[in-house]
Length: 299
Image (cartoon, rainbow, N blue to C red; front, side, top):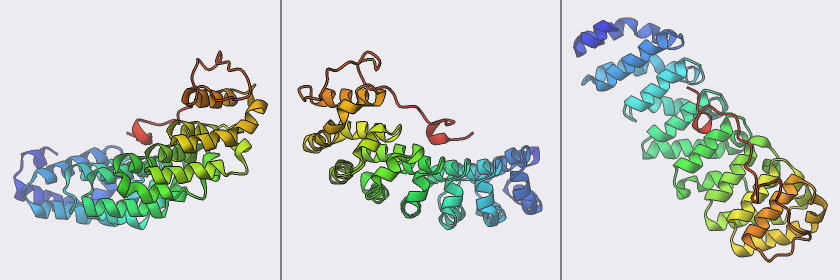
């Protein structure tokens, strides 16, 4: 690496030409990955477009493999961080071709999130389109759900609307699952008013409201809906919930739902005297999914 550090662009190009056939193998190696990351950084700082093109050419055919490898993913993330979007098109092409392979992998999901950050407008729309197309699978996956949530947080409402709309018609099924329930909550929080109303109406109309209230994950979705729905929407939801509250008064979930209702509508009759002694006067915090940093980012 000292030769690359000290050399000029022509010398660096000559060295990289010699090692290019071995860059993928090095990137997959615990120690070699750091050297390849350094090569990417030097190429990005170089005035030689040939050097960048040489590195891209060496990596592109194995982009998916690198994305999901414990060492290789750092090389791809370094490329996304330092190289211009046009040079990183090979990463976006790989993600488009194998979105679910990358997005549902422990390391690949982090790469996909970095793609959202590093993309130009055209590339970002392409990434969002792939996430939207595969949204149902990603939402229900231990790692893919982080990708969906990241898109919802990082992109404009207009750009992310199609992703959020994918949960319509599946709200109950998604709400009773550990990972997708987080996405439904995020949709309720960030969706435009008309789409949020559609989601809340689906909850209100559910013939399995009692199951949602009793479920360890869907209960939090209902709580979120009670917090963010419009007044009219929320009153409809309260009306759908009330017949079930008395049978839930001895459950923590029932008391949390009651607390949400009374926080929003203090004078609503919920059918029994409130007792928040075991919930601290407010709904308890939802258990957090295990993750390494934001959205399950793995270093």
